[in-house]
Length: 204
Image 1 (tube, helix red, strand yellow):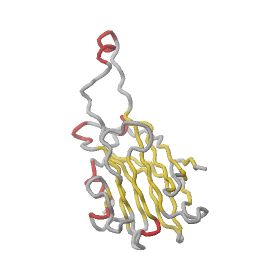
Image 2: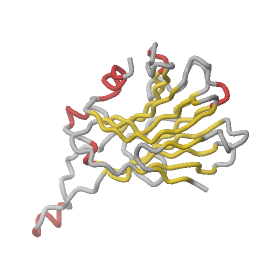
Image 3: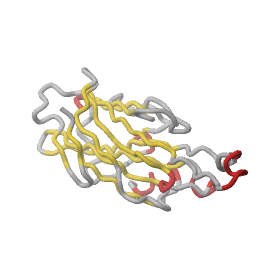
Image 4: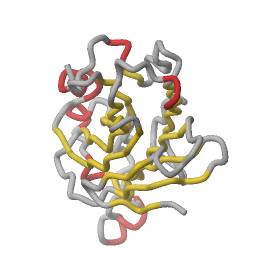
């Protein structure tokens, strides 16, 4: 049975789930529906058709014991889909967030992550947020969930519910080692980092 998490809540993944080794990190979001302009003309136009789709990019920051990334290869995202260890695989970029369910997925093999890595932080940034004047206040139904890859059973889910107006990136959550076991921490912290490069600098 899946656990529904609140912001800041931590949950054990491997303790109590004997044999759990490979998980899927599912991240999802929906673009908020634009408000239609009033009157006859507004009804015909159905809102502003010139607004660009919001392209969100999910990333996995593979960190050492100090919570830092020490090389660019430790950032798994749309331009680096696989970690050098082979333990973390990004399943590809979703350009619009359209449709139900996970928008992007990152597969993590907990049993093969080298010991030097103690934490994997999952973030989502809006592509060209400043240039397009977009922010997470224009996004709704954002979530991160963890699924057992062997049987597709959802272990836990965190629905982000804060107000993220003017935030261009969000740290969704992290999977980390603790006393030889793997745990998940629901973070949901918004930032004004604009895209991959600025988010990466936060962890260097």
